[in-house]
Image (cartoon, rainbow over all chains, first blue to last red; front, top):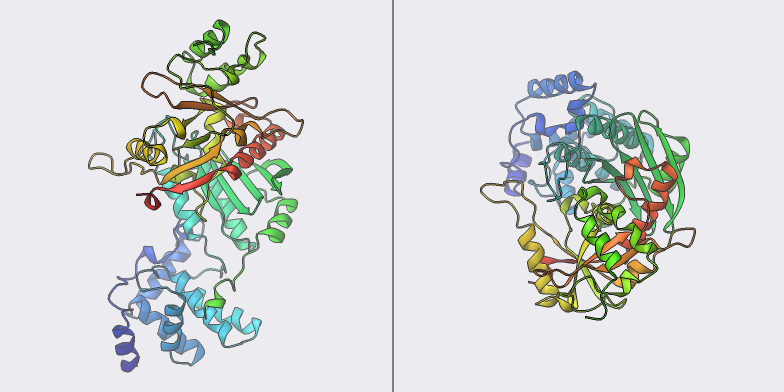
Length: 254
Length: 202
């Protein structure tokens, strides 16, 4: 173990991570009904040991895989993730799971391992795609300054952010890839998936409803308005068909 | 100047300055019904260097970070202004310093964080397109989506505006079907835009 620690330290993985804190948990997890569960997860992690985050990774590796952790850290390097770029526990889980791909384990085994890792990390259900950037951007929009665009631009309201956050959580659990978020002058937030000339634009202003516009090859194919709680079947089908999360996206780098 | 718009259209432009910024585009809509002149094919002021030719390159510097998608491309929101107060563009050929000059102009508008304004935005670049790109975009019923007006003034002689022809105001205030039509037109214009980042030029 000491050898691993020393080797990893030499590679620069230690010393940059900071202590276990709420920043290790995706912000959206802290704002939904799992809050207590997440805090409990953090508490347990803190009590689990005095590990620094990187130490937790290779302890988890050893505990679950009965395999040395260093190869997984090396995999992280191959992904191009330096210690500074690995600030969240989700990424540790991703390193771990992507590492599994290379070992040609069965899908059920990978799921099992992912489930265990995620439960250890945040005490919640596993999520295969990383929406952190979307949630962070949403938070930024809420905190945006008045007149942010020089034309009396408004920040996103709390109610709009609530509706968007809920929608993002639903999209995430359905295995849809992470969308981009944009802010309008009025404070409306658009959730956007784009690929080539195909666009899905979901427009939120307030927490009661949203409007979804689907363009295929640059032409409007679907325009619908729904209560904010809904995730319409036709929209879900379209997103899963065209914007499904590709969990193996980075594997070619290995 | 023999190529100036008629007095009626001049009055419409003048009147648009007295309405709220979200209604300027709709206040300019009567220009399209003028039987005396074609505002798009004429100059609006004596400061103008000439009418906006279809082959002219236009640059919009509203490349606000909030309007950039995760993949680094532009969002349709950048065209929202065309439905509110008109999307201000600079006619590159008539701007001092050309494209680099426009970049500098945009950088001056969005200079980035300062001691006083810690969250002030920094212009990442400009989006360039042809006047004909905007003029050729049509709705499903064949009507044109945008007009490009020469709106030169004393301090900004290379100034022009891209103004929507319909579906004005805030997107969320429109019926759903109209939001679909407008969103399509906005994406279609964005597709024509070439984003030129500042760092690549300086």
